[in-house]
Amino acid sequence: MNSNFQTPPFSEEPQEAQPSLPINQSEPNKRPTSRRVRSNGKVGSFSILNGLQIIATYAFLAATLFTLFTPNNLFSGQMVERLFTAWQANPASISQVTSQAAVDSAANRIGIVAGHWKNDSGSVCADGLTEQEVNLKIATLVQEKLTAQGYQVDLLAEFDDRLSQYKAIALVSIHNDSCQYVNDQATGFKVAAAMHSAYPEKASRLTACLIDRYHAKTGLPFHANTITNDMTNYHAFDEINTDTTAAIIEAGFLNLDRKILTESTDEVAQGIVDGINCFVRNESISPTATAAK
Ligand SMILES: [Zn+2]
Image (cartoon, rainbow, N blue to C red; front, side):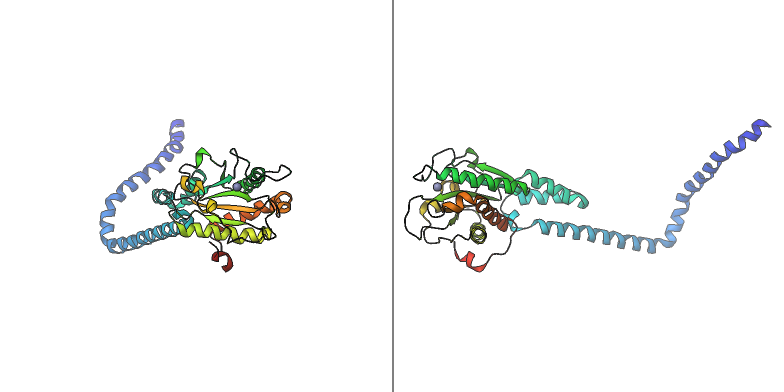
């Protein structure tokens, strides 16, 4: 009796589970018949749902790829790598994958050359101030600011080994003009681009961005007519990878612009940072800036 009494509760549980098993097992047997009955409707709705899912997935992929397809990515094989990553990845994780890729790659890298650094002094003022130390101060601030914004920034010496086939979104070399008094017009900045790059139109854009933003930040005039062969034939332009968009800036004249260069160095650096961001983010430029190449 006791055992009889005890077994029902125990056996009932398995029994409850067991009846469900035969039902489940019998369902596959039933399905073929029921499938035949509603095969048309079921298959139809299933394929529509499938189709919608496929369309949604491809639309998402296309949209994601389209956003990746900015001019800044075009310059290198990085674009291809990203496409590959995007195709391989689950659509839901594309953004994570690409942001990870961006951290590791040239797509997030910017090179800043501190003119004459580790090589020579550049221009020298009567009191011993050297172009090289002014360049390095500006370049270091530019590096700090861009790093704070999430870029990977290389601070490069004038003849840095890393310049050989250097790959980055942009390379900007920072120099300054003579400390000799020439005339009252010897004030302002110059920008020249590496026009031998694979994408000269991008070099023009980097130049225009630097001119526009640097002038806006510092108020210094742009010296379009005094750009020398030393600038346009700048040695680093021939060393870097042709995919890398590069420019050289003479931030000011050490003589007449000394005050802003040495006392408002942060603004000077910010002007260069703004110019680089303008290029990287494809921001609009005032029409006057594009006239100067
Ligand atoms: Zn120089």
